[in-house]
Length: 158
Image (cartoon, rainbow, N blue to C red):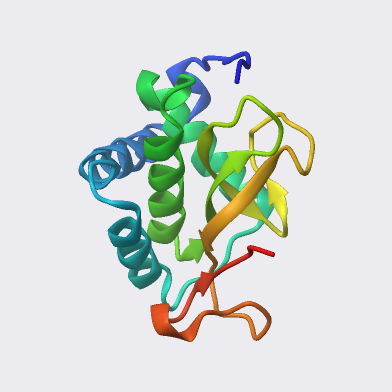
């Protein structure tokens, strides 16, 4: 997938937010080496007790993460970017829906992103461009919840 990355000057994000974003990026890095089921389990635990994030809260967290990390701002940094964004939101008491999926049209490729109210945050692609394989939502929903994986895990496969 090719998309244009817009780098923001560090002054666009307040100093305190940059520090929190750097901590989130640092915490997300080792998680990217774990197998998907373990990442999902850790993020499910992190999501417990958090309120659902508003779109603007998630966008602000994503902007802060991409401002402080070139890896997260780049095309190949989707996993670290999405985890760092979710962790930064959690530090603020809210949680977006963290998603892992694939591009819905060839060539197929894996991707990770965050969304709020069913809308992808900061991806710049149309709805339906990615197909969700699994996600970690801010709270369990009756429809589609897989109880074996604890609160917050929502499976959205057909």
